[in-house]
Image (tube, rainbow, N blue to C red; front, side, top):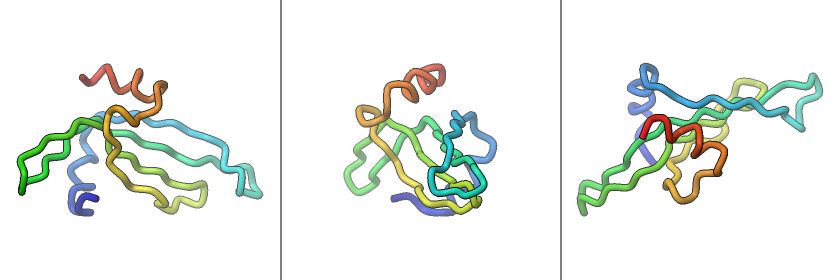
Length: 86
């Protein structure tokens, strides 16, 4: 996990945005999936992990997923889009 204060720094960063139909929405709303390429550094070990910060916002505009995913676990279609930032 990463601190919520980090979110403000992401506002000016390039990102990948995907939309998908929300199967639970009665008004045919869409979920927003936002990916930011980045690194996570664990200060106690100085280990660096490359991946993407994920933010998933449902059709009701509620943040329901906020996660760092290692590069080897990113779906291929997202990895292809993120590769432009590598």
